[in-house]
Length: 217
Image 1 (cartoon, rainbow, N blue to C red):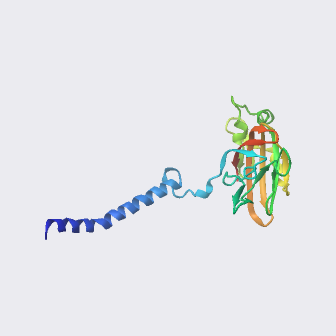
Image 2: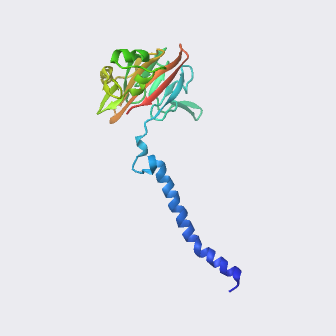
Image 3: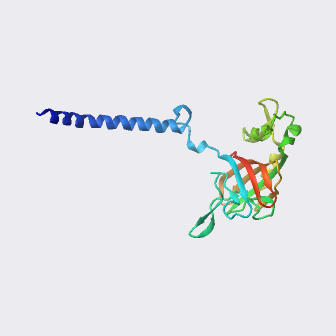
């Protein structure tokens, strides 16, 4: 057999082995993206969205926000403005206010916790330079919302009781530096519940509000 034909045969025989190795390597890389240290047992659905978003009262698209994916609540489709997923609205339903429970069968509650700088005084923990420790510490602990106490310890967040009263078009005035809690439920889906927190980091009266936000559930 000529030498050139012999090399061709060897290359064809080696091809399946090379393809198998490449497939195994790709699968290993995909597993590594699912969780820390390549732990494929960590589901992607465990991710809770967070971000920094500016809402504009006079923009039909950027007036509302989805806490689920961090995108604006409306979109332009087929030359029309259509709702996409509006968890919270700024200025559209009540001038100068946030509104929740505004779409479909959704009902909501929104609670103003007051200025971020006062949380430490009321709950007895020490803020650091620049603030934000109180806001950052708000989370679920054994099914209840908690806030920072001493060190890494936490304590129940008293104002969270206000989240139990959900209704259509619940609103709260927009105030610079204030921290808010939001809870959404759905009249048509008893399994649905969304809880989020946000802090107003910039506010232009009647025009825009910038939120530091995080989905909690």
